[in-house]
Length: 290
Image (spheres, rainbow, N blue to C red):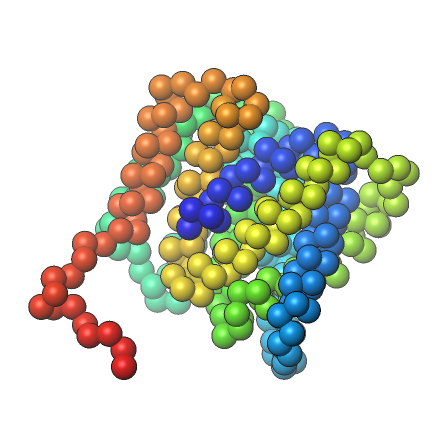
C-alpha cells in the first residue's frame, strides 16, 4: 500500500512537469512504451514460459485499457488544464466509487468503511481547502477528464481480478503491452509525430514516469489487488493526495502549513478506520492452513 501510494503520489508532480513540454497523449505513449520494454526484459531474464489462453488475452486487454491506457491519458489531459492537486483530489473519490460498484457484487460497505470514507474526504477538503475545489469551474475539460479517470480506474480494480491467477510480473507486462497497443496509435493520430525530442530534464522525467511510476507501481498494485482485493487497494487513493503535498513541499518549495499537516493526518486516519481490524484473540483465531 505504501509503495503504490508513494509512486502514484509522485507521478502527478512528474506528469505536470512533463506536460509542459510534451502533449498529454504523446507523454503517456512514451511512458508506457518504455515501461513495456523494461517489463519484457524482466520477463526474458526470468526465463519462464508464459501460457495465455484467448480468455487471458481478452482479460489483459481490458485490464490494460482500464488500469493504464484510459486513466493515464485522462490524468495527463486533466493536469494540462488544472492544477495537479485538483486531479489528485478527484482520484481520492476512487474508494467511494469502488465501494459503490462493489454493491453490484453484493459486497455492501460496513459502517467502518463508510466512516473511513467520510473522514478521508474531510481530510482531502482540509488538505487543499475550498478554493481548490472552486477551481474546478475554471476548466470543465480538466474536471471531466479527472472524474472519468476516477470512475474508470475504480472499475479496473475489479477487472484486475480476472487475471489474479497470474503472477504480478506477468500481469504488469501483459497489461502494459495491451495499453501500448491502445495508446500509441491514438497518440499518433491526435498529436502526430513529434518534431523534436524534448530537453534532457524532461526526458529524465519521462524515464522516471516509465520505470518507477508505471512499471514499478503496476507491479505493486497488481500484487496488492491479488493479496488484499479491489476495495482495500482503492484506499491508497486517499494517501496519494497527501503524498503529492509532501512532494510539493520537499521538492518544489511549496509551504507545508498546519492546515496541510492536519489534512494529511485526517487522510491517514480515514484509511486506518476503513482498513485496520483488531486482531483476533489466540483462542478464537483460525489455525494456519496445512
